[in-house]
Structure formats: structure tokens, C-alpha cells
Length: 104
Image 1 (tube, one colour):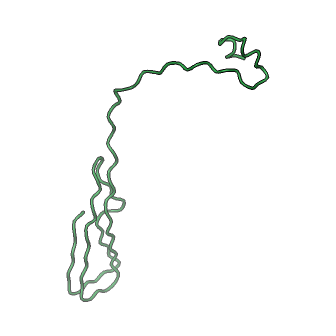
Image 2: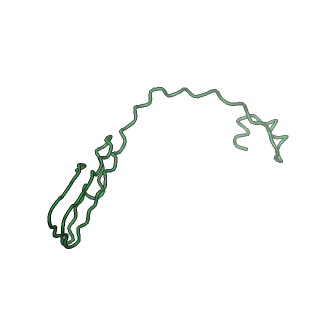
Image 3: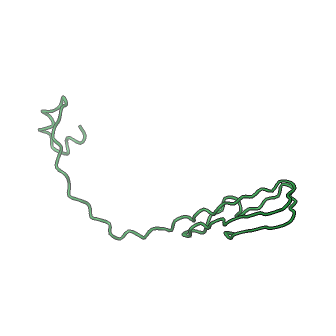
């Protein structure tokens, strides 16, 4: 698999035969790149029948796991309180404490 193939014959007979560089849906091992299917050359003075040539490469392997995160940042400082905006309770918003406003 993954190498060049050259067939040079006087005569070739094929009854729906198949030459394949890899099995169906090939995939490299995890962390490895896929391999080339190589070059396929068929030379014959006379050919009989049907010969299927499937010259495909191999899909790359899945990626490796990333490094564990050790540089997790500390939470940032709290933001400023929101200001009362355009709503019908504007005057109430200014007088309620934070605890009272949460359930409002």
C-alpha cells in the first residue's frame, strides 16, 4: 500500500476485476499523516474485459489530544452596576437595593 505499481504484460484478461491502492475508506493511525496511493500504470498489448482501478490515497489520522491546560486565569474583577434605563420602573430602580431588585 502506498507504493507505485506497474503492470506490463502482453495480454490481460479481467472479469470485473479491481486493482485498489487501499481498502475502502482508508485512514492512517491517530497522529499520522495519510499515505499517497502511489502511481498505478497498466500496460498491455491486448486487454479483454473490464478492470477497475481505484487509485486513492489514505486519509490522515485523527489528531492527538492537546496538552492539559495549566495556565487557567483567575476570574476578573466584577463589572460596574448597570444603570436604570428606559422602563416604567425607573424611579423604583434607583431606590431598590441589589437584593431587593433581583426578585423584582
